[in-house]
Image (cartoon, rainbow, N blue to C red; front, side, top):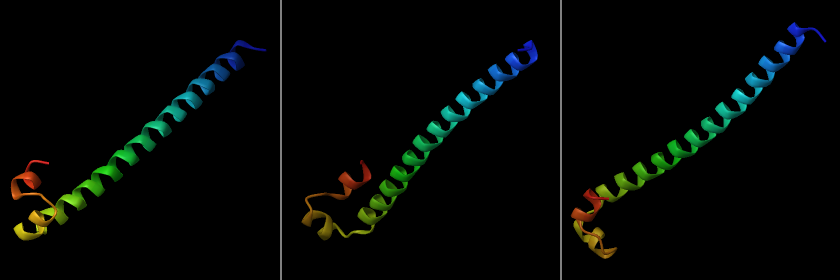
Length: 67
């Protein structure tokens, strides 16, 4: 096997491993973004509630603002 093929194999292996890590990070980022999106939707829903509705679920406006 020539040195050129050996180096090419090493480079391809490193690129493959790097691509795997990038995919894993992208999946984690997607999960984090989805959790943030859901949390923001819940916060908008709580912010839209009246004080009476918040008291009904044992929260105050202060609780909602400081979550």
